[in-house]
Every structure is written in C-alpha cells, then in structure tokens.
Length: 193
Image (cartoon, rainbow, N blue to C red; front, side, top):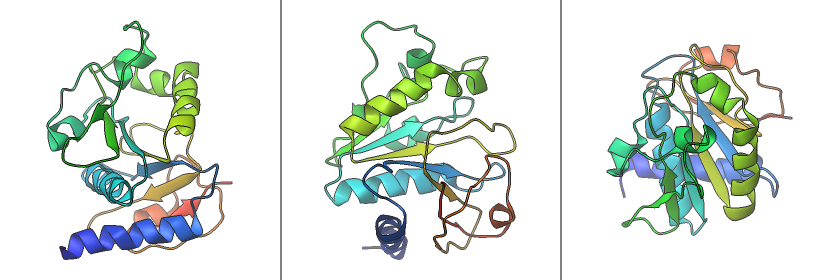
C-alpha cells in the first residue's frame, strides 16, 4: 500500500476511535478556500471506510464545481441538485463503484442557480435523515467555506488545508465560517456538539 493510503487509514482509525459514535454517521470535509484538497480527502476517506466493510456513501455537495463524478468516472446527473429541487420522480440512487465494494457516490447533478438554498432546505435535511438509516458512514464533499456556509447536518467536521495532514480530536462547536484551526496547514478533526 502507498504512504498516502496508509495516511488515510490512520485518519479513519482516529475518526472511529475519537469522533464517530453510533449516531454520528455524517462527516463533512470542509476548508476555507478552493484547492485545499477537500475532494481528494473526501474521496479517499470514503474509499478507506468502504474497504473496512462499512456501507459508505459519498455525497458531492459542491454543487457549483463538482468533481467526484470525474474522479470515479460516473455520470454527473441525476444527482443531489436534481433530488433536492424535486425535478425527478422516485428519487435518485447513488452509483455503486464497481471496483470498491460498499461504496456508493451520489454526484452533485446539474449546476443549480441556488446551491446554498438547496443545501439549507428541508429536502436536504430529509436526505440526511434517510442516509443515516441506510449507511454506516456518509462523507460529504463541500464547497470552500468562503463561498458557502450552510449546515451540513454533520456532527463530525474535517477541516483541511494544503500539504501536511495531522489529526486531533476535541469536543467543540465549529462554526461553518472559519476558525483558527482552519487557517493552519493540515486537517483538524472536531466533533461538533
């Protein structure tokens, strides 16, 4: 295994030991600005949880500039924006990833004119309630914190920045805006009360 894969397994272990409890199934990967590696971190965390045998869902909630469909080579639509805007009957099912057992990806879908409103909607809250019942872990790939500040319905938040990654755990309220931990290089895992 590669050094990077081992790093993500270590992050997974720390999350499981210190942050993820029975009712804490949704984990949001956030950062203060673009190009901080959120999509990369979210995708790799989803993969290592799935490799552990956890039924894992990756939600691409970066509705303006989604990338998960490119990384996993799946169709971009229908997706989250289609589902949340009510433009599809019968719902949208996550795409299972063939080479990775236990992993499904729900892509962002078509770029909506109102991404913040969709994520802040009751439809998003219903989606989160539903996936909590169906999946062992849900990883949310979010837009940069500077462009969007809705609630991600996550009790565990992984802020990340470029280059170095370190993991700590502490009980604290992490506002959707920025914190001092987000401006330093690395990833600081916090459990949101």
